[in-house]
Length: 548
Image (cartoon, rainbow, N blue to C red):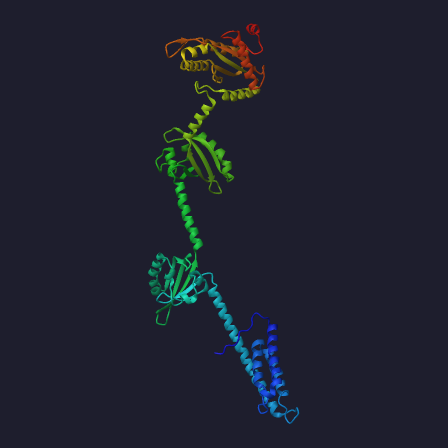
């Protein structure tokens, strides 16, 4: 089959035409220069050269310029040739030859132009089909009855990592599958040949460089006139990303299930206050059988209805706004005991009808926290508040007294005779005596009063909301009477102690906690220097206090 040279597609039409005409003019010039040597007189004219030049113009520039070339070459054929009888003249035979050239040239040019157009259309159609096949967003191939490739598009070959000659007629899909994928394909291939359909089949495709690609395969059968299987039409889609995402989602679901169904954090889903789902940890925390809480109102887990309503009121606004709500509160165990729960919830839908609550039992932590706080704010020996807690309560008492217009009394006590007991009977006896003194002091004061030990044998009584100095002195008198009673020690001995007491008052002596404590301390030293078991009010002499 005649193969014409490819048209220079990279050139513009104008440049292509110029190139063709340049070649043609060169041919004509050559004919003129060498006509006597190439074409003797008996031959006549260089028509062969003209035919070649005309064909090139028709093929390179199209029908219009080809016709123009025929006209130009006709003039050249008529006007250029060996001289006859020594001069240029119009001759009948040359005119006939030229006319024959024109007729044949036009006919040949028209046929050549149509052939050129047909070839171009076929090439364009083939290019479009190859583009659709090779550049399709999926792998495509065909395999014969033996399972060997008979065709494959460019994307499929890139997945295999091989050239076309390496796989066509030589290898099949099973040569690029994992053992599991090979077993799947070999089990399904007979069904393709018998039923004409395969897939969707999901398997791993392994390229020559070891790259693993997850693909899904669909295929149909091509049969001959007798119904025999000829080849397959197979399409493969790369679902590697989707497979990784699906595997990750499965992993996340498993992790989520493990987290939700843990044995540490209780989780419950509430719909309009009713428990519609819960994990096993919730039943364990609250002491219920596994399924007993399903369908029950959450109110059942709260100490009482008021506690439930208070909790709902506090959580409503943040949950409605799409925020998390977290709090710590006491809830009711199945046994009736109160347990401390760290509770965190979030809304699940736009109407706030569904809420997911997570609950952790923090009862041991709360108990430990209470113990730590007690140690931090209480005297280890007597259990009384220490200086830190006393300062806090004194500050609160002063603030409250300022609002209600009441007095606050601060009584600083130092035991008389304690050192002798401690030295003679030992430290254990001294500790026992201090514990007994602490108990007697607490029995002498009111319910809202505070008795604190601030070190050694020194105690402070905080008396808030007193009406007068006399109310304070009445309490001090009870204290002196209680301390005057003998204390029995472990060794059988009986000892007696007293207390020197200094008193300061708010607002008479100031409003600063430190100032009041220092003034009461100074008054206590004044009483101690004057004797034992005495009471002194800051700013009053012994005579004024006695007269008062």
